[in-house]
Image (cartoon, rainbow, N blue to C red):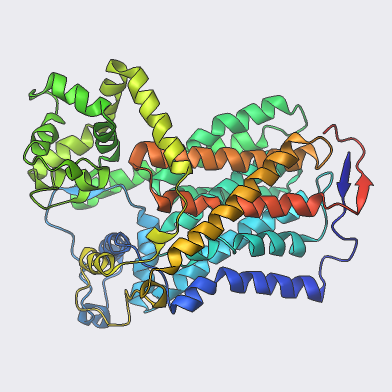
Length: 497
């Protein structure tokens, strides 16, 4: 096979090192330009949950209490399982030491680790290059021209979704060549990423069948490594969820419930509402209580997943206007509700899921990462930090005038389209890159599609969910370009592609 050689120079050169430094600075550019992190309204919920958990074994100091941070649990009999306790603990610990702005550095470190391990192990593949620094710096620099810097600065766990996809694709394509410590490190990073949001866990689970198919297709030594490791990651992540549930029930006498995103999604899509219209009223169907609450207003805008789940106003609210006991019953029954809806309407439910996934792929604006005044106010309220210092939870310079967002989205969209076209071109044209490189790129594309299916199908199509992974397109295009650059061709023996 004919591919291009990136460089025969030693991997540790001053030029490559300076390029890596430049790439890291560009990844932090949004943080620096904005004058601080980018907050989302749900950032407050993570801090609140983390503070409550942290206080159970590390009581707050007098300074943090004086700052207005409350640490007592809410007076109800439920605890949410929809947010990562681990991410909440990290945020709460940083708040207590007045270092919340350090969190983007953790985001960048995780991204850098995933890319570094990819570059290191890909260099051993046919067509690879030993120039690890260059293979790390250039794709990061190209990706930083799109949404990557926004998610490095974003105070939510979203950056760990693309980190997870890079690790899964790396394990699948290059895992058989990894050393033991490398396998342990990247698997640990995959586990950490999967634990930080339920959607990450769902993505990891849905990627495993594709990883297994790749092992069946590529009949080579140690080809089952990736499948076994990802199954171990999934098992450990599920065990963490179970341990969280048991610990909460024992320590606080509360029941862990998950926000009924699936229920709201099915209702908005139509099959769920048709099912409820058919079976309600029925005391044996807990979701009938939500069906009744939806009838309290005839405002058509109430039928969106976010309004159903979070809105509290009489015109748009429903779930939050129900009694706490009914809310709990609806939340606990969403699996049974989803199963009943699918069995009664399999075709329409499947079509709705596919339609939502397709719509999600087309959503990639970075607008949701730029906070509004209302979102910042909600973040403070959810964190129970009404009396915090004025320099925390501020919008920053990027939120003062949002007119630039449309232009940025257009530029990003062009880059994504060109990158996708280049990736498809390389995948379809024989001899451009090795089979391992193609497999990595293919799994990035599969991962983006799975992310769209999970987020668009279970929650709702939203720009936030799409933009968090779309920077992987220019990243992967740059990666492929480096290993097949025209003008420096060489023959790689033993590779069939």
